[in-house]
Amino acid sequence: MSPFPREAYLPLTPYAPDRRPIEIDLSDNTNRWGAHPDALTVVREADPDELIRYPSVYADALRDAIARRHGVPGSAVATGCGSDDLLDSGFRAICEPGERVAFIPPTFSMIEIFAQMNGLKAVPVGDGVGSLPSPTELVEAAGGPGSRGLIYLCRPNNPTGEVQPRAWVDALIDAVGPRGPVIFIDEAYADYADDSVLERAAGSERVVVLRTLSKVYGLAGLRVGFAVGAPQVIAEIEKSRGPYKVNRLAERAAVTALDDADGWIPTIVRQTREERAYLMQALRARGLRPLDSGANFILVPLPDGQDTDTVTAGLREGGVAVRPFPALPGLGDCIRVSIGPREELDRFLAELDPILDPSLTGNNR
Image (cartoon, rainbow, N blue to C red):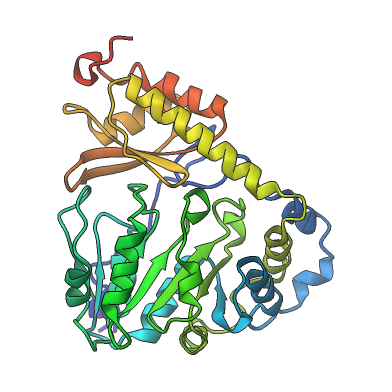
């Protein structure tokens, strides 16, 4: 009899988003203005010998660049193959099998999967969009004071775009105390928001902040992420994630992008915020109720009588891809739309209009 699969893996299925080629892809929240130009130069001018040599064991140059960029010690930084690599490694490094990962739904879909893969129990807390549980509720759900569990918080949250109030986040950090669960704060989209808690992570054994270069830096294809936390916590995550996780070209490109010598990143952030406001207004003018967002995407609940399958299929026929989120708690069927240049957003709106029923949206345009 075959020894596979492990019992914990029986409910799991491979991650399978729709990645068919399409003219305008607004489904995955990458940088629609392109990759960081300095990183592109590094890749285009790479020495072929780079490909026959192993990368740095723990991406020392990248760690130093992150430390410079964010004003933290290098010993407080771990790197990985995207931030989800570090989430997976962190779950494994901090929790014993059977312990808990508390989170507020809906959030990043891989959290429950990583918990299952690592023999942990994923515990949703709260009633869905529009209500935050108390910090004490989250701590108790993760195992309570003195436990070795985890709390996962995505800020800004994916897929809703919500930015939990800073006072609430600070209260959560205070609630875990010096011996409570570890809080993983996923700041994949923090560059587009107004606030970060990264500065608290480097000095706390109970907070780890995760970032990625897949979004504002436009380097999703190179898979570069990092975590910031107390050096003793980071050391355990690096043990778990293992060596050679960031390839040579990715490391060199990421270092150059992080240095951002010509100030490209602030321009991208400004353009994204401007187009986010434009799309929000345009959707509201159509009678829709998009959620406020601090990220580079907007979540749009569909009106009664519309469903994600019909809307996403209709948009795809018109050459535009968005991400479907069926039956979200408290919201119902939704689509998530990445922010891009004005011409891409206008194309999305033009393809959306004939799909939506004016009698359902209240749109009389």
